[in-house]
Image (cartoon, rainbow, N blue to C red; front, top):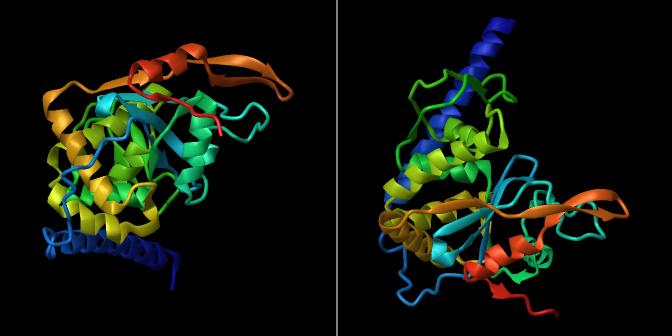
Length: 280
């Protein structure tokens, strides 16, 4: 096989993979969705939930504490340290592994408040959610290349040109690929997430959440996640969702100056209804 044939074959296989992802999501979501989506009429919204979007290295590219009954998302800078005695305890790195309880405990310690639950979504999990709504439209703020780390699955986007993205490329976009600043990365995630919130039929979520497996893991059960998502949708329809930066400060440590959540950042969370932390 010559190089041109090999390159063509790799692109074909990648295209088939994208099609299969969409087909599986649609098939699973439409198969008896209502019977597989038990309702939880008495579900209580967590006072504080840590939402994390994870890259392929399991590090979080976005971490936000969702409070105020889902109306406020406090974005935590990725290099914020949760434990002053551990230089590797940044909010980004505590997302490693598939134990969201660890992220809950770390965030509770770092902010000195009570974080109730966590929901961590990986790239393929987000891609499945996008496929569920048939793709998303985005308008990039600068020229960019999606799939830069996957030479056989790339897509070039032009500044201010609206395009339709399937799940695979929408996930890369939401992860912030091609953005030129942290604010740009957040804007790209919000652009995709808003469409997921607006267009998802919650009745189809349960089988899809079951199908993505380790690409979405939480301290909540699948039924609880679906109920949470439905409440977020209701709030999204009636209220303006606030996205705020959680206040941090640089402090001295044995490792040098590190970023940590400040007293004013903790107060932000308390003012949004997050509970005081009960020391063990």
